[in-house]
Amino acid sequence: MFRTLGIAVLLALTNLHAGSVIFIHPDGAGISHWQAARFFWAGPDADLNWDRIPAIAVYRGHMADALSATSNGGATTHAYGVKVCSNAFGTDGKNQGRPVAASGQRASIMHEAIEAGLRTGLVNSGSGVEPGTACFVTSVENRKDYAEIVKQLVGSGVDVILSGGEEWFLPKGKKGRHAPEGLREDGLDLIEQARSLGYHVVFDRKELLETPEKTRKLLGIFAAQDTFNDVSEAQMKAEKLPTYVEGAPTLAEMTQVALRVLGDETFLLVVEEEGCDNFSNFNNAQGALDALKRADDAFGVALDYVDRNKDTLLVTAADSSAGAMDVLGNPASSLIKYQTLDARDSNGAPYSLASDGSQFLSQPDRSGERHPFVIVWGTVHDTSGGILVRAAGKNSEKVRGTFDNTRIYSLMRETLFPGQPQP
Image (cartoon, rainbow, N blue to C red; front, top):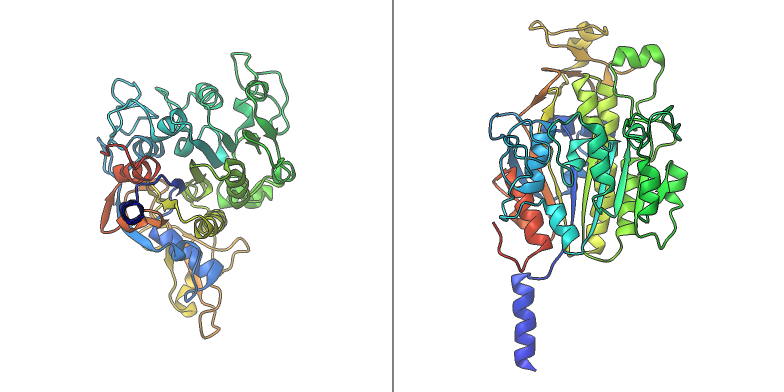
């Protein structure tokens, strides 16, 4: 009896049982993005869900050939745990083959999970072709080979796929629920192929939330392209476009349903809010703030899940800071000169105002005061500074100090496969 208890205690202490992983990638969201989101949605003295994630480290995201990451290169590094070139899309970026991962296998962490019989899921607010999720199961020489990406995605064996991008699931001449016409030139109807593979297919928020309880494989396609309108503030105002497509589910809703379908078995779920990146690349402040709120709501869903399921790791990081977004929040009197849509700093940096042309206002601080601010942009590109890794749940204590982008893979693999040799 005492020997049995001793073994049980030893196993508990060494933490050798497998756990599930939720990796949430708020694309392009650096520290200053989250500061802006906190001011706007919660208040300077309040917390976002992002703030509630306890473990924290500084992210080091350079590529094999560049100091700033591309979305496809960064995602490939997360998926394989090795430095790749900037042009990599599930490849090494050199001879264009699938990389040899840090494990020594020519397989991503999700390929390993599928091969081991674990449950898997990919959730993206953008198109299914987005690399933040697609690089975990697809490999192409050119990131614009959208038809091949979606073909590999549907045939990958992933249990849950939720995204936009219907245009690349359908052949030319065939109208979709969202797309006026498919764009595939190979004649394939990948929605019908998915059904033949056992996927339950849904197309809008209502259908997603009504997914039958016993569903094991789920494909959700919620827009012709992205589930958001990533255009400039000027175009959005001129065309009276909403930031997100009406009828599409939020990232939190997609994450909630994905977790339900994946069930109580060990799983790997990769979730991306793409709008943080795309809106920031257009220097669209309101769009970026809306996207950050949606990412933060997904963190709330994930944190609640981890609270109920202690053997689950939640880890999050961006791979870049899109647009070098920041907050200028001086007293109102000093912000008066910025009350025009084309306002710029003396060095030429553009400022963004609220959609009605006024300054943004924070939620109240602890004294009940609301404070004005404007958003300032450094570029329309992705920059390398000011990114954090955060984690909660199983193995989260290992997120500390500085954290190389290759270690996202290592942390996920150690959680999913604790009994195997680790890189």
